[in-house]
Length: 251
Image (cartoon, rainbow, N blue to C red; front, side):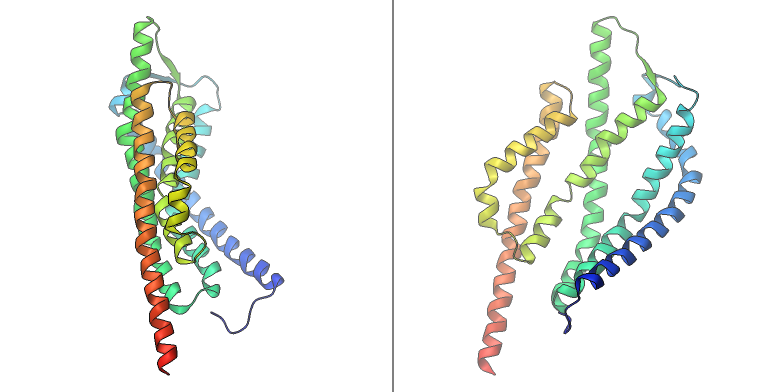
C-alpha cells in the first residue's frame, strides 16, 4: 500500500481525473463509432433474424436515432478495457504490490467474459426469441411490421445486460481477494442469489418456458462457477497470508 494515505479531497480529485480520461477516450471512440455504425447496421439488417421481419422507420428521426445508438454502443465496447483499467488504477493505491499485479490480470478475463456474454445472447438467445415471436404472430395470422428503432433497441436490451452479467465471476474473484466476501457467504446466500437471477431472467425474456430456461440455466451455472472461483481464490489468499506470517516469525 502507499505509505501516505490519501485524503478525501485527494480521492475525489483522483476520481475526477480518471473520469476525465474515460470521457476523453469515449469521445474519441464515439467519433470512430460513426464510421463503424453504418456497415454494422447494414450487416445486422442482412442477418437471418432481420430478414424474417420488415424493418420500417415510423418516425423521421428513427434512422438518426439508430445511428447515434450504434455509435454510442460501439464507443462503449471499444473503451470497455479503458474503463476497467481506470477503475483498477483508482483502487490500486489501496492494494499491496502483489494484489495490484494480480487484480490487473483480471482485466483480460473481464473483457473475455463481456464478449462471451454478448456472443451468447446474440448467437443463441436472440435468434430463439425472434423465432418464438414470429411463430406467435403466424399462429395469430398477424403480419409483423417492426420499427427499425424498436428492433435494434430490443437487440441491445437483450445483449448488453449479458455482457455485464457475465462479469460476475471476476467481481466475485476480486471481492474474495479483498476479503469482502467468502465462499461460505456465497454458499449460504445461494437461495437468495438464485431468486434474484430468476427475477432477472424473467424480466429479460418473453413468457415462454424454453427461452426462460435458456437464460436462467446459464445464470445459475455462472453463479456456481463464481463460487468455485471464490473458493480457489480464498484458499490462495489464506495460503499467502500463512506464508507471510511464517516469514515474519522466521525473521
